[in-house]
Image 1 (cartoon, rainbow, N blue to C red):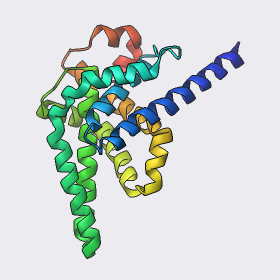
Image 2: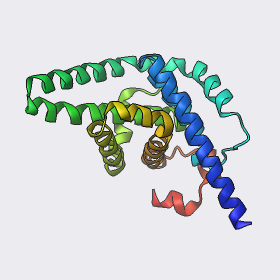
Image 3: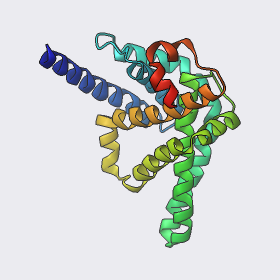
Length: 215
């Protein structure tokens, strides 16, 4: 039975990673990044079921993803954050062209922080409050700064290794990175919820008291 369980787990993980990666990043690429926030939010909502250990491999990921994509178009409210990231990316490109290493060292951590903010914003939306204010998300980010730094470092590594070939890797297995960053941000935000005495029924139902006490 153990071998069957392990095989089913591995098969489910491969299915989730491959299908969701293709769908999420294909939407982002084909929309030229315009649907970045709705696409990531849809992926994070499916990731929520994985974190809460209620993901059903027999559910149609495609149906769920595109069904959520329509609903999460409201996340375009935060599109100005993407515009800031685009301006920072252009700054990095220009700095590289003129050989200004100072600006590069300044802009790369800055855009990594904005990417971290996007991760926390979506995670806050998925696990705590619909359409939160940016200020409260930033407060939640810095409540347990070690988790925020962990996500920020991952974003730095993504930027450092970003090459045209990486776009193909994201398309194949980008969900691994998304689920990892979502999990870290989830712990940070759940700690913030606990401090505010705002843990919901889902939190107490799917996680043990021992886990919640450690937050």
